[in-house]
Length: 213
Image (cartoon, rainbow, N blue to C red; front, top):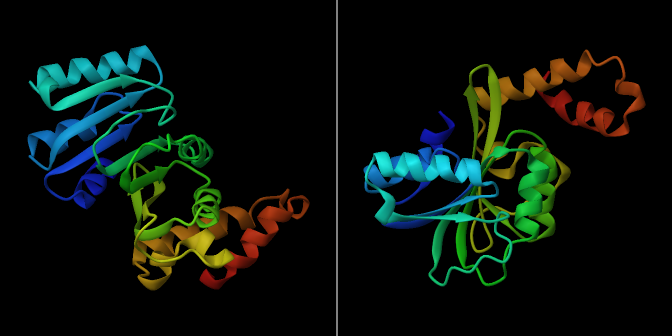
């Protein structure tokens, strides 16, 4: 589900970076459906990178991809413009670290981010670094909720308030049933937390979520 929603946001004839490509599921769908013309797959460890290479080889797609062993986007040199950079399947703090250490030489138009957690912290980072939100969506997959955020420095909605950080400015302007369901689920979970009164951050979050009672 997450992969399909990511693919849906990428326009035809794009050049894409996938950070944490693993078995190259994103690259394979993009290339076999002729959405991307070229994909750069990035892995920090050799084992997952080998999985990526083997998967692409099975589909005869090695000529349409470059598979790089690298620490995220750090010290990465790619001269051509990148239309989309996908970072999914990891925690929000890890995504923040990847964006913080991004090579200044990279020209990336859009980032599609799907954190496993800490979406609020990620949005705060985006706000502090003048990123804007192009699109957002809540995804329900195998009993878990995920937040998808498409962001860009050049276009989109500004992240202005604390509520924007928690909920996302696009989500607030385009509330879906799944979005409301997700907020109610978070509210219920926090309300049952016995240690809530000892955590100021959780208390603040509970107060913000109260609008979805």
